[in-house]
Image 1 (cartoon, rainbow, N blue to C red):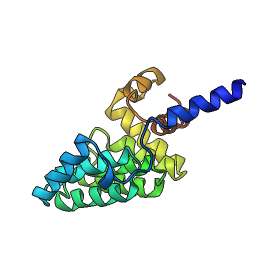
Image 2: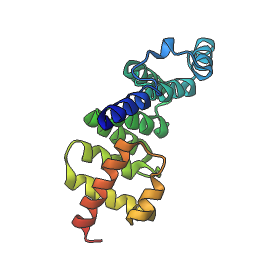
Image 3: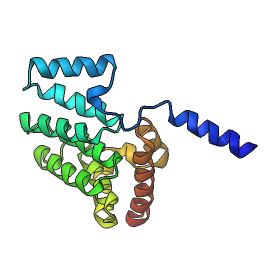
Length: 181
């Protein structure tokens, strides 16, 4: 009886969030507005960025890739488009692609964006290169001390997805034991 209740609860919880939907068919005010913006101005990099961001939340990988790539093509020096695309790839478990995207963003901003160190660290973590991951995590701590203690790390990442949190918490332990802090 308890297993049945738990199974039903999980089913109900999973059915609340749209899963693997086609953004072109997604009926929401945000989706409609973005479709209209892109139709009115096919060179609006921001509209493509937001379409990619929105599509990532319904797991429409095709639209995510098309949208972010178009946003980056239209505005190749906007490191936030590249960083955000990396997050979408990371959450889709495309770890090598996320790392590569974050490395490109790192080059664009010369490592000065507030997320450039931690994203590269997570990219290397995702592909199993823990030595480089710990190195970039240490650079993040130097740039942003909120990643130095577990309590402050939890606060700094409170809005992250569970995949992101699990990875950064594990990376925190790797860093802590690697760098003796």
